[in-house]
Length: 328
Ligand code: 5GP
Ligand code: MN
Image 1 (spheres, rainbow, N blue to C red):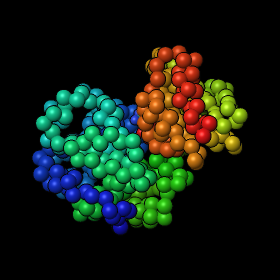
Image 2 (image 1 turned 30 degrees about the vertical axis):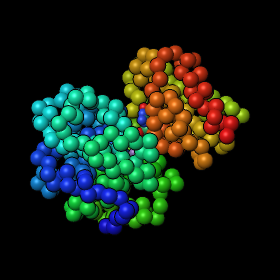
Image 3 (image 1 turned 120 degrees about the vertical axis):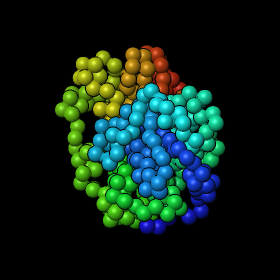
């Protein structure tokens, strides 16, 4: 193993972990494989150090993570007493306190470590280890394990691999350096199963997903002289197919894959009148700024937010937020 970024200061986080009696690791709401993979890798590492650790999130882990060791030990929903009793909380991959989906009072009297790779992170922790150079928060955990002097076991390696694979869109983003590939080689040496990951994440879709995909592609609309591509799915289509937002993961990649399209926008109605928006961009566009204007956040090439009201109203709001980027 070798450290990806040796200049990152982990000392305060290390001290807090050493002193902690009961640690709660928390992922963000609507968790993805980066936040869950980071949570699991850290869980395995801290357990191997003999720490008392518990994982608990607001929302259930996505189906694509079902193959990761200990994923079923992650609690969700109502907060049990042992979580309340934690003296240290470690948040992974969450750009703001709101993204943790907990009452602010929960954090009172607890030390909070915030580990994240979103440039827009609001530094809400008592200790903040934030670095947007990392391709995934999972890659930050890879470095953190080395500072903790915990060897990489097969369970942590699988979890970090899932995080990195998904957050780099299968090693296709500019954040994928030669060092990222060297780390990935380490993960595979330590036991990450590349084929199992691919099958679980990319080749286990429900047939009904393709019913939904037909509707999504039917809604494809290319605007702004070919520079933006829009896809939308209304709530009744999720109801009709018996699917949820998670089942349309990846649909936005069809919109981004179109030649000449700089920005892809996917608008899905997860609850009536509540729309989850995903943005994807090609260089040099920055959709993190666009999502930020709409109350969300994310990265340059992948960002999101939630908007309310009719589809027409939501599209107008997005169009308004896109004006600057499309004119620059
Ligand atoms: P996705 O489109 O896959 O849901 O999210 C893409 C990126 O944007 C991820 O890094 C995710 O954390 C971030 N993101 C998505 N929705 C929101 C949001 O509502 N608020 C913030 N702050 N970030 C978001
Ligand atoms: Mn991430």
